[in-house]
Image 1 (cartoon, rainbow, N blue to C red):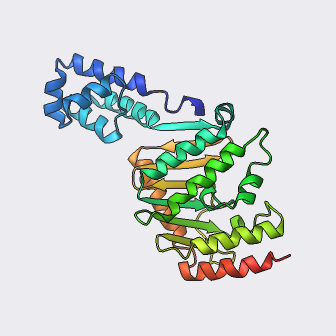
Image 2 (cartoon, helix red, strand yellow):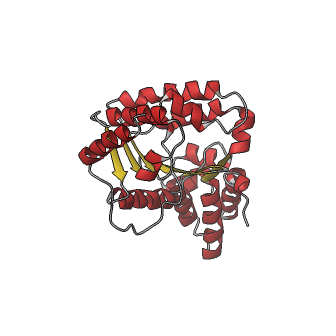
Length: 277
């Protein structure tokens, strides 16, 4: 069984494999470039490991090399692993959680349409300072830098060139992470953000009809190019178009069972009142 830490570590192996296949086919980088429609400079960067090729890039290269079916299967599998990374909680703690916040900020800055599916907890972009602090309370260490960086990330919500969609379950909104007074403020913040023109908040309430699937984990999709899924042990980053497409379809499914944006905002306001001390 593949260990999570092995994900994303096949980049150099993939580069060497593709270079060897080109040489075995008796092609120069220039000739391969013409055959597969990828620039020679990119071919060179792929073969030296400076650029991670997408699954489409790999399939185009293999097609141009007339690679046999068994080789195609092996290299495509290798490419899928290279395009999937695992960011473990322990390694994040060693580096400092504020570095993870900077990485997220960079991903968010490069995306125009970001979709969040939140089945159990409220995501960092929506946190109040008190909720952010409570969300890290069980993790040992001083996380003041991480909290500050998380709150700084929230400025991107006001960038009108970007669109955010948050689909939350009622369970995520009700989860008693903080004192009622803190939860009340947190729900009020989400309701306020939901009024912004570039932000859509949708709630899957307990009163909805039967759902076809159970919400196994939190995930986020950035445009149509990247998906992340969070677990207790860390986060999986997926760049394979098939993985991204699957999560987009999954998001659309859950979104279809959520209340409308208007009803969701009313739901948030009503739920906020229930936390009034």
